[in-house]
Image (cartoon, rainbow, N blue to C red):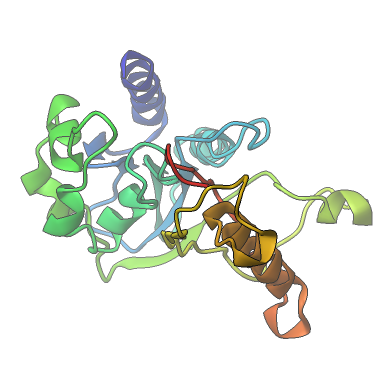
Length: 237
């Protein structure tokens, strides 16, 4: 928490030094606004996950602020707003895109009541950060916003294989998460023949093996089907 506060404070000072209006911090993201003119958004996410790659997320924010700095106060026919989203990865609350959901007006009361592993709700986490959840609607996009640009590292091998330094994406990868429970029939493993067993882990392994190839089929080009994590409870197989 302290590290994030210091990070946002440093970036806020940097934005303020090279922007015409002070930045604002809402639930899940920081935004520098141009309240009266047409504006394009430039930004990325603040959080990351293990092994996501160097400069995951923060590259897009640093470059956006550096762009404002490089303009040296030069006026454009439209405004540039810098946004930095938090809780995009869904690590803490198991629900991704919290910051960007606020931006598009879809951060509802039900999501605010989601709890993390310590029993802290999204709403309470926002309050603990010193922010007011009731101000979330103020973060929603307005009609004057004309587009969004995000500069991001490549988190795959495609550009490297093609020996290209830069490319424009053709699609954005979304996330759909399911929680599945595989139940077994309690038996004594030593005395139960294999063909009469009904083991949960065996069934889950068969399901994983069946789902994984879906991402490689022609009809699923660009899709990614994979298992995130699994857990076996004591007393079950």
